[in-house]
Image (cartoon, rainbow, N blue to C red; front, side, top):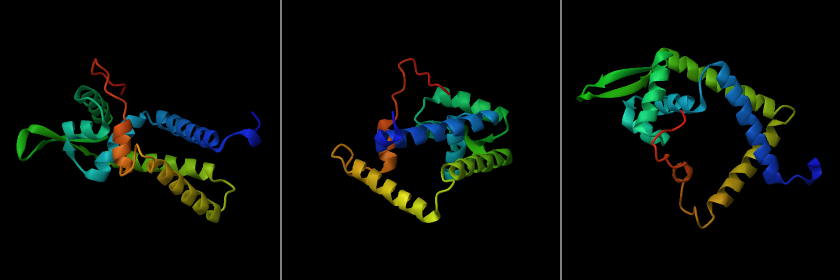
Length: 169
């Protein structure tokens, strides 16, 4: 299809797909999966928390979270500590190496953004950002999503947990 005939929505989808692809390839080189990166970013933003709460925030089953936590712990990205108020509960937190990993992941995102916006002026970026916010608002104003924020929307759109209780992590 000629680029002149390509719909804007299709073009946005292609840009999104390509940027995700580049991010995943770079994360592969770090031996980390997108879901594991999500766990690290949640812990950075919200601090240590029980494994069950972390599973709920990620929208995955506790057994899948256990597997992801084990992988991250084996790589030294997280630490498990007994909750001082309830010794039966373990809180999951970031290690120093986990914080370093987050900085590397942020660097990946910055590199991808630099690539995406190569030869695009600051003013054009600001204009595109404004347009994208407006497009998101238009979509969120649809009667199905009216009154929801992006977090509620993402939670609603999260795929259901398979009947066998196993997630891909």
